[in-house]
Length: 366
Image (cartoon, rainbow, N blue to C red; front, side):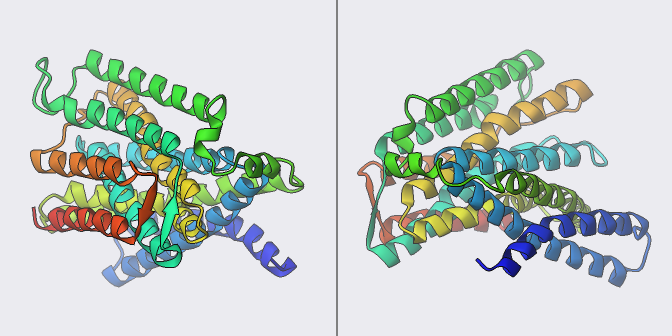
């Protein structure tokens, strides 16, 4: 990368954050302005989101290459999960209570990852490299964690007896939240410690990555979070605007569309990083990023949203509808089968894309 490109990528997050703050003030002041004015501001916000995402991705990948795997992937995962928690909590407190928004956002994240992101990674990776190998131990650990967390938080509420259908009682919600944190925390501890070799394709390469010159790594970390802060500010305004528009238009399942929109926005950095890794024939890193984001979403977002619900007294509905439950179990089941042999092809990716297509279709035509 040339010196000018480095300066541009270093300046982009700061410029994006400043523009995001300015634009947010403009959106607030233009709430009663003419429709064309609000439309222009919304389009500018969407453009800035993409700029912030690409800037964050650049610095996240720089950090990953400097500190090696799996630490680099965890930095991006935690950063992006912070975005999702911020957006969902702010949307929960926006206007009237929306008890199903967190459920739809988390469910959409799992389906986008297990269907769309993994499908694209395996399809294009298979086209370029014919077949790709992965570490079954690490991938199976991800899928076991994801299945346990998904069923405990999104399926179990439909079968509890203490309160209404699809909801936990306060004690149950607190108990499941603590379980989620402990389970995810134990997984991350194992991933960074004794079982690290299960999650990297070449342990030697990962160890060498930590000895690369670390000049500027602090700057990369700061600029990563600056870029992500811009995404948070803009995503909140865009999602709130989309929600208000869908409610005004009386669109069916507006919460599902908003949830999918939020998940798509916050997953952009990780999705692009996973696709790039797959194209470089680094499938295990690609899966670490994709599946790690889904696990972190449930393991960290649900407890944060639950805490907000318990503190504010706002109702929280986590149990999925029957059709969504079928799609969730199908997506998880296909993932378990796809990675069972330790080798994937383009056909494997197409199966995931079909499941993702069904998910998208049923959002708009339930």
